[in-house]
Image 1 (cartoon, rainbow, N blue to C red):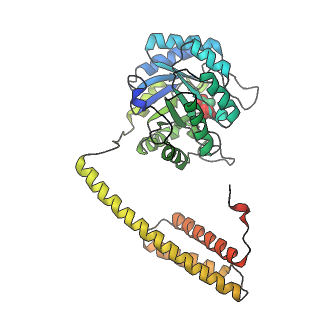
Image 2: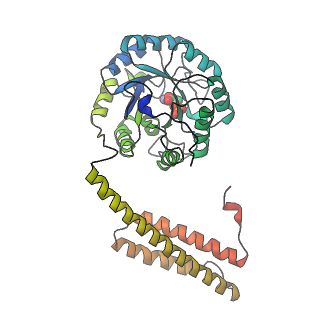
Image 3: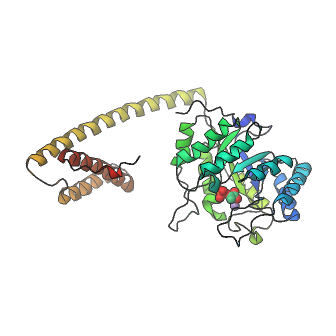
Length: 369
Ligand code: PEP
Ligand code: MN
């Protein structure tokens, strides 16, 4: 657990920053008209408190639109003056930070391609030393919770306490439904490591397409995330970047109004019953672990017996029979097939590992760091 981080609750950041905080605006600032028209549309949505816009764009190949640069910061000043929305931009170099601060940007964010590189993150944090500005940290492209945590720790060491994580999904080499895999377990693990860390979901970069935004946004809220960052554009069809995932301000309004915001905690009666049910789960988990340990002890016994009799560790017929039998039982008990299969495979893997250890065959190349 990481109790030495000083993280300010999101609700203290600025008036109206309570949960769920909605941040919206174009992937990239393209022209003054596009920026101001988008902001005017967003201003009509009461839940939107922050206007985001990419000014410097990290592009995979150099021919892509690389952003309008400092000119765009002047447009953001206009947005703030006219609409009162706070402004947020991505910064990836010290000169970006200096320019953003000079033009009065309210919130900075580190992009996914920046967070993968501790050298860059360190350099940015040094530039921010002594500056009291909120910083959002997108997850790194790869599902490495420590890299994500490291960026938050570096910011905190530089004196930044208004820090939030942004969950934007993880790169996956195969074509899949989502542009970036959500892997919800990663932001959940980050929250476990940094209690009190606000986490904002970025459904736009997870989905890569408009039609999936609702379900991912709802799931983020159901998991208790603190806000949403959703890309919007006055005319998404002609957007220079991320055209497939941006929505118009009107579509965003519809999307937000279709979401159900649930409470994190309920009435005292609800909490009491929940507590009772949780105690039952605790008891059952203890029993499960006990049974698992008993099973492993027998696995070890079998391992010794096989060694004495010079028998192979893996007997494929036995393994096939186990899978067949346990899946049948599981199906009668209403357990999900895929879930049970994964558990059986995990238990089997550990049993093989233990027996190999007993045989003196253990190869620890897979054990990780
Ligand atoms: C963005 O927010 O437009 C962006 C480039 O995001 P990411 O760093 O998550 O890819
Ligand atoms: Mn984008």
